[in-house]
Amino acid sequence: MAGRHPATVLMVAPLDPVAGRRATDWDDVVARLPEIDPWPPDGPIVLVAPHPDDELLAAGATLAAASDAGTEIRVLAATDGELSHPHLSDAGRRDLVERRLAETAAAYVAAGIEPTRTRLSLPDFGAHGDADAWGIALAAGLVPLLDGASVCLAPWPSDGHPDHDVCGRVAAIVAADAGVKLISFPVWSWNWDDPSGPQIPFPQAARFDLDSDLLDRKRAGIDAYASQIRSDDGRRPVLPAEFLAHFTRPAEVFLLPPDWLPDGRSGPRT
Image (cartoon, rainbow, N blue to C red; front, top):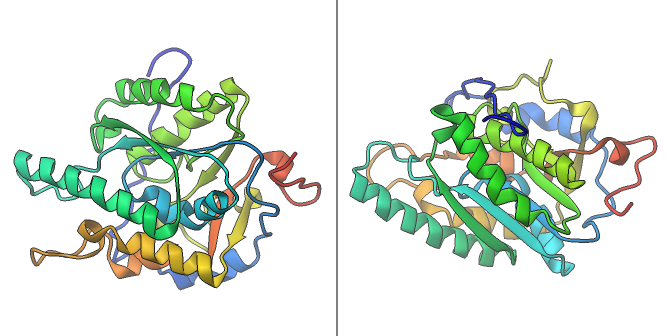
C-alpha cells in the first residue's frame, strides 16, 4: 500500500490449529498480567475484525461489558470469511457468506453485544496477494469510523495471518493519524508463539477478567458460529476445540497504549 498507509505483511505461518499450543500452555503467562481497570472507556469503541468471529474470539466479553455500560461499539468487518472452507465452489462460497452473516448476528445477540457493523467485503486472505490495495481499501473504511472514537481495537500486527497483520498495521497508522488510542489483540499468536520466549510483547499486555456471566455469554456467542466450530461434511472443523480453548479462558488479553501500562497506568478513562 503506497503513501501514508504502508501494509507490509509479516509472514509467520500459523500452525495447524490442532498441532499448535494448548491454551493451558499460557496459563502462567496470563495469570501474571495486570488487570485492565476501569473498563469501558468514555466514548465509542471501534474494532477491526479481519474475519467474522474474530471480534468474539478476541474481545467478545470486553465488547459485551462495554455494551452493558451503554458504550457505542463500531465493528469494521474487513472480509466475509468466504475462504474458511477452501474446497467450496463459487456458489458454495456465496452461500457460506450468507451463513456467516447470520451466525455473526446470532453471536452478537447471544453475547449481548450491540454494535453497528460495517462490511467491506474485501477478499478473504486477500492481504496475502495484494496487500497494498487491500490495505488502502481497509484504511478508507476505517477513517470515518474513528471519528469521535475513544479507542480502536485491532489484531496485533504480527499475529501470523496476512489479513490480521495488515489489519493491525493499517489500524495503527490510521488511529495515530486520527489521534485515537490503539489496543491490539492476539488471535493466531496463541497458537504458534512460545510461552517460554514469546514474541507477543507481554510487557505491553494486560488482561480483562471475565465473571461467570460474561464468560457464559462469550461462549454462547462463539457457539453461534456453527460453520466454523462444527462439521457437517465429515471434515475437521475450521476452529477445533483445541484452538477455541484459547478464547474461552476467563480472561481476554490486550496490548495497551503506553500510558495505560502498569506503574503509572491511568486506565481507559484518561
